Length: 214
Length: 204
Image 1 (cartoon, each protein chain N blue to C red):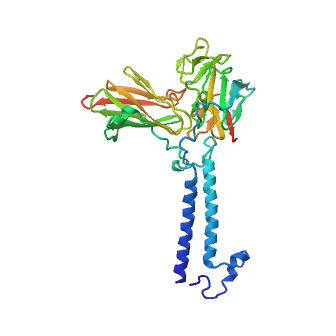
Image 2 (cartoon, rainbow over the protein chains, first blue to last red):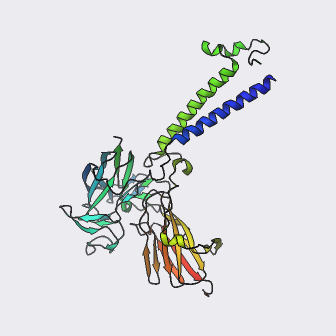
Image 3 (spheres, chains in turn orange, cyan):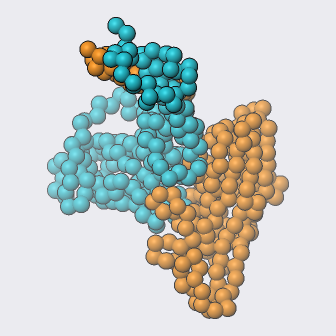
């Protein structure tokens, strides 16, 4: 009799825990499907935060054989690493973020912001005063006569070109800004400087968008 | 019946370490109290997981299921023309490394840097035929989809991670077409494949 009562008590407790868990998880907002995205358009009254970013490059010529992140590199070889400068963009939730990214070092780049749906494909190419003079779409490389590939693909821009990325930072978080041309991305999202065949990519070329809560 | 008082054995020795106010409670209330505490701990844990799920840019060592984060539940936006069409039920099969589809709809998953499936054979009743590509972006970055060959060069709009879109292409000729993600170097890293379109009475 006493045992039966204990069993009933135990079952009741487990049921209580279960019900509480379900209630708490259903209290969470359900609008998560779109939460991973940043909005590609800004609302009219959002404060505009404009950042001028330049693509840079660190390099060094090796004085002797060494291991670069575990990979053998020989004397007189050049190690290169492309960068975004500034590499960290700090904004608040609700800001309209404008990134003017100028290709100074490197024959061509693209830019994609992880987990946000924001990237350089179709972004306007702007002149010094901010006027659109082109679009980062598949097209012949304007510098093909002396460097880079014959054609640029969607999202790529060449040395001398400046693109504008505009979006609303509508959720907090730290988002990686990545140039895929100079970064090898593994199957679990790991960013690498060498591809699977061991070829150096000049990267990882990565910056950070930090969106702080208001 | 009063639970917890049966026998009068020196059972108290075991619970003597509990706070005094707990000792004054009946067995039933004690169990209830423990249940409430456990529920609160569990609720806090779920709440913490939900917070973690909100930061997709942050690298995690564990993967939350899609029903939890909701990232895979993005709504499909069917085009108006598509709604009027009655789709045939797809039959799936494998043949010589190709995914064989009889019907007019094919689902493709895109991620870094793969299209799945990427060797596809579609058998339609007759040509020309409009084929609907249901594209799922299961990756971390934006992706796109392009079909090229036999005078066709159709490109879908780019779309972000976690999103799904439908893209229609009308094929007039049977034969082999190239499918790829045209963004930056995605195709050369592996987001490319072959699509064979074949009519029912076509010999090829």
